[in-house]
Amino acid sequence: MAISLLPVEGIPEIRDGDDLGQLIAERAELAAGDVLVVTQKVVSKAEGRVVPIDADDPTSHKAVVAEESVRILRRRGELLMTETRHGFVCANAGVDASNVPGEETVLMLPLDPDASARALRERLGELTGVRPGVVISDSFGRAWRVGQCDVAIGAAGIEPIEDWRGRTDAYGRPLHATQIAIADQLAAVADLARAKDARQPVVIVSGAQRHITEEHGPGAAALLRSRAEDLFR
Amino acid sequence: MAISLLPVEGIPEIRDGDDLGQLIAERAELAAGDVLVVTQKVVSKAEGRVVPIDADDPTSHKAVVAEESVRILRRRGELLMTETRHGFVCANAGVDASNVPGEETVLMLPLDPDASARALRERLGELTGVRPGVVISDSFGRAWRVGQCDVAIGAAGIEPIEDWRGRTDAYGRPLHATQIAIADQLAAVADLARAKDARQPVVIVSGAQRHITEEHGPGAAALLRSRAEDLFR
Image (cartoon, rainbow over all chains, first blue to last red; front, side, top):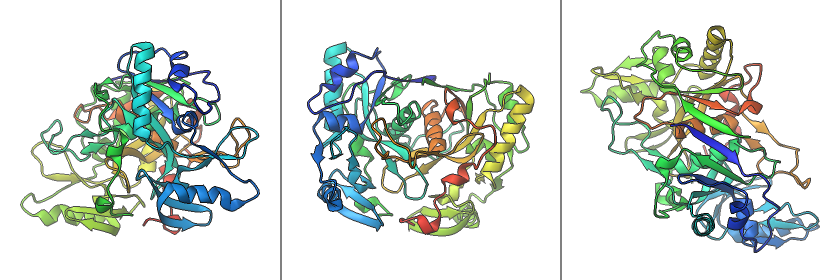
């Protein structure tokens, strides 16, 4: 199955209250079976998840991180590995300096990224007649490997996990990899298609229609390993 | 930048000693700037990393896992989270039931997957005149998230990590995600393009030429977080 990736060009700087669906619909040719991967930053900005901080007070940023965390798992220097209100394990609760010029602000993760994905999917459906799969992505570090990979923090209209448990390979043997984190792989894919400094927050993935679902589905919440099942928290 | 993915069709069952480069070169149209993502299974098979086990003795498989591990990090039921001789943290040292019909065997990871990637790259260069980037992928679980994602266990001719440390975004602010695990994202991308039961061990990624390098480079070893820097081992 051939897959292709195309960044959406010309998305402007996003501000609180912007209609992200409309800004995308005006610039993208959506086809049935497409998946739209959108970075967390633009979703958070459109949802007003921005707070001013005091640039002269280094505790100001940290207070926001603490507010967004339910638990601090590890600490090293400036890095806090936290569990967020959603259950994500990531650096500094996903709180990031926001790149709005001239303002000292930080950007928080959306309150409910799966709800954000569902809303964006519905809005695109209204405007274009196509309800694409939607993934909201963010760059997370990993426990044992250097560097960040984009993962899905929100999803709608896609199968977040492809479940091969109980299924067999071409020779009838049980498969080694049994639950494939499709939503995370879609997020990682999209990140490859853009340069970090290129202002391309939206990438269209075509050819992944076998992972598309009619219903919104369980979202990226399905990818959260519970504390009880987690051997490394 | 548009990226596209195409599985190579018709790769036969691989056996010890097979010339994987030739089998790929006969079936793929390679262009400059392409990255070839190859699953660990076919590389291990071609390298004879298969050992017979006694199907009636459940300790037989486990003995191979122990042999391939330098350390057992966690244990739950049948699952061992291990550190392999290479430094990978993964389930059961990456040892897997092999899908050769009629034989009770297990497949181990290549002894030196970066060397395997370099050799394959050179061989493809000889045969086709194009030295593609090469990534050898395997499906690994993650600490805090459900499901597996493909990651790079070997690489040659690509930049495994895109380093944005010290660089800034469109507004001159320091970037949040500073080291992008490109090799892992390439592995994840390729996995999306195939079905697990479709015998498509090789996927060509086109359009990622900005990550291609002339030299073989540091390989996937660059993605191994050292124990000293790992907060979760």
